Image (tube, rainbow, N blue to C red; front, side, top):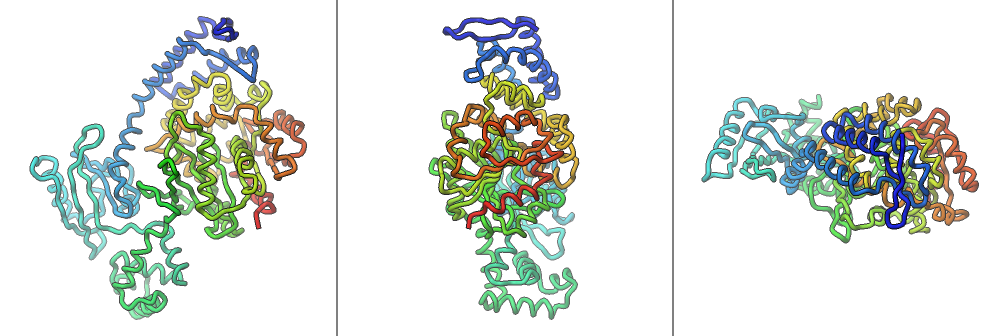
Length: 595
């Protein structure tokens, strides 16, 4: 490998040799056409760029700041965009379904495929991926009538709406569909079908129990009544006598101070919207975080910021417990293992998890806006909406940067910082070089070639979508035995896979937000911000012996640079340490809880 040096605006810029440049560009286009070749680009890039990093100043690094290289990356990005048109399509279809929240709604194409469905439809109709018209829970005898109505709407120029009543597969239930022909953003003609089924959001029973001091059984029966079940049907389903159910309904009437079942159901319906109520509700669809095994469903709450952006957030643990702010890393790891979430509830912890701009349905900030400032402002507004005046911060890895920034901006709002696998300011070139190759590739890329980072991140996200999260995590953490063990733990992996849906799902990719965080402030020297907290706020770092981003040599430098910080070493732990050692982390967090 050879390199050359050239002068640009009186600044000495280190660049690639012609041979290395051509080879890198070839691999760049390989990845643009097939993200599965990403690791080959990573390996070549590191072998070519790695030696160049030794020749530039860490405080003002400039590598490959050349028009030719930038143009090739721009063209390669255009190829990537063609590989993932479904992102734009899904966003457009989601926007068409946005006016429908609790009402199940879906979009059908001429081939009777369900192109998109809102959360209420998924919940009420148990729709699988790639579902078709025939998968709807409609009585077989009525399916032809619905199919015929769709054909009329697709073919008729005079009729664009229809109302159809069909029978559900559940005995005795009727479903009324309103059908309307519409046009998708890509010009495809679709039919929007909205039904009259009520979709009761997760947490609804808990609201009823808390509001009227109901038992779980009484709350379940009230939900059955809202779902239009008769007394005999409820009794049969629950294995109880009709007289027992009637007695329970009588108790419900007394506790709710209503005088009839109709009045009781109306009262319950009026309370459904309370399950997601915030200081100011955000427009758009209602979203739920769903696990696939042991994790319980969690409602996202929403706020509208002064600039009109939507910001979502989760509450884990006890809704009325002592507050903890949790910063989940730029991978968007917003869920904990089911045992950890249960433990948080038992310990009386109310864990508040804001979704940063560009993650989930939290709106992205504009190109010229300060991403870090927006993230911090959103976080403080979420805490205020939840009535939090003071709490500790629990953060993962690089989010120690945001924890320190928040504490500096709001010194009275936080009682301490606990950083699991925490990373402090990187002030030495060796600290980048010691990282495992995937972490070094992204972080050193953000530091030395930030203008090229968006392509690298977008391609990485596309690779994760192509090979699946488990395989992607194995690629990124494959050299950390401890992290591989976490990935292979079923409960931990469910939390990783479910939580990271806000960063990457079938319909969403947070690649732009991910890149914006890395090129904002966290890879600069923010050691003065850390020092400003000395003697004012407890800082506790729990780091693993097998961390691919903060290996032991780097951790020892952190200890020497910040002797006043409380450090703990976790044996057989990596960057994903929290998902295995959460009990120890929560034990250390507990003394920092605000009174």
